[in-house]
Image (cartoon, rainbow, N blue to C red; front, side, top):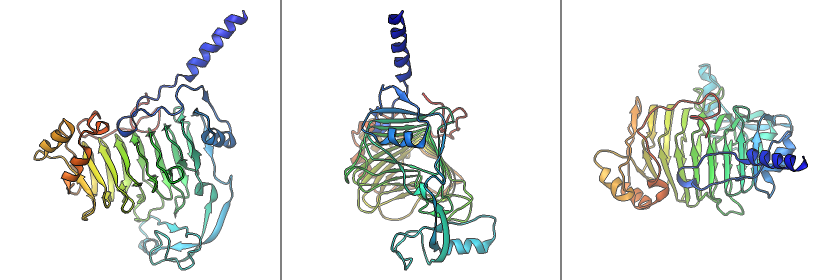
Length: 398
């Protein structure tokens, strides 16, 4: 009888550990996260922090909401009220702007981003959102259904071979610039991480960036099937849309952005590059809706292949400046795609949106030529995307 029970126990463990996350398309192909290790279900904030940051390979399942607000206290201090918020208040248009948390030591209000022509303003914010949950290498973090919600704290990926799937991150001091990033990829000891897959993520109501990759960079990142919802009560553009979308930069970062829904934003959707550090983005089959500012902002020395995307009501699809390079497929340049990728590129669709213009296209094709993480992606015709109901993001989970 003991033998039978032992066999049953082994079978149950094997079933529990056989989580199907699917396979990452694009640059993060081959990411396994925690692999086939037995899943753990954290029941407390302390357990969650420990599982994410220890040295073991783990599959961490979120079957509940973790609310971090007031767990680390609040802080009241002098902040900045920028001119755009003062103007927003004067408009009385039903929307609210954002004040700014000042950088440490910025007594003159001249060294903090977002504090333009600022005046002093008392601000209060929740401290939990100012520091993120640290995720080390070889981890899978996955939500169950629509139960996996992180309120009041984002995540910081400080390791390689990481999967974050079906998680909603929300309520990070949305009234304040620098109130908190949803997802940051920080690198390790100023060295880039690799094989990071963000899939079926939802981000809403945050103070700063939805996703930011830092100066160390990320060698291979895929952002897929995710819902980036910029609808907000507090908006730097004073129109209920979040300005601070994405900063995708860092040294030699390689990023695939595929099958995502980016809506109700007003800028940085995404901003590519962080100065002179080169980065490469393949943006494919995404859906942008209702952006009153700009979507793409291509920075110095960075390149982007933008194909098969659907833009609806996007005022400026890409900023008009001489920096960086962007390849926008057309009937006239398909031969360049064919030569670089061995296939045609999918055309973008623009509805009630500004023109999407390429520049420096030969620089893009020379860098993507023969890159299997781009040529091997299954590209569909541009279309609107629908959000799932049984899980977060676009489409059902694997």
